[in-house]
Length: 216
Image 1 (cartoon, rainbow, N blue to C red):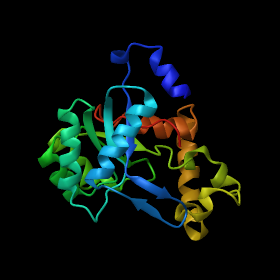
Image 2 (cartoon, one colour):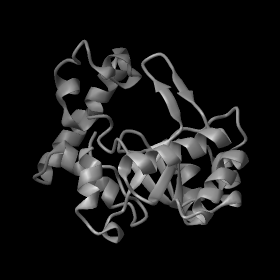
Image 3 (cartoon, one colour):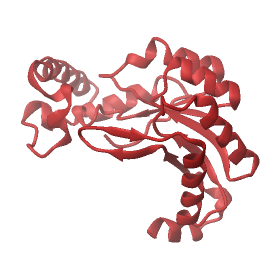
Image 4 (cartoon, rainbow, N blue to C red):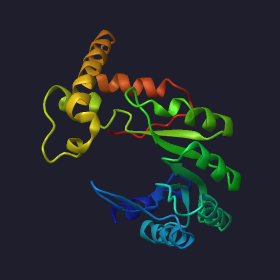
């Protein structure tokens, strides 16, 4: 309700509103997604109602439903664009093939993927494809799930933390990553900043087509 109230206090054209759909259930054991035509529309209508707005600026497919052809999901999103209910379409965690197929149905405006100094998998294929097609990249977890904050690396991971189940923070992986963290810490010290600041500066320095999500 707070978000709905806040949106009413400002001119709608001054706000860039982004939200997602697609994840039905998310916990430590499974991720259930739904990209069906019916679910696409029902989620959009529900978001518009909850937010109290006539349209969403950027609407993301939060996770790809591999049981539904991406063309079907995109086809319904395209209809929502034509109806004025959304302005732009985004994807999250999509493969190179999915990006191309989706973009062929309707232009993709933004792709959300994990990207940081510690996680650079997307450099090989994803980034080149996005730049070829003119798709902005929205890196999430630019501090590597808080890795560059240092607490879980130089101290211990709390037993009730999500990090306990993350390979990056367990066993030998944590030991190897601790060495990397200490090197980044020394580099940050040379530049009179913290490791987190260095990690964010590195992302922002890549190119203007990257818009990282603040936070972990």
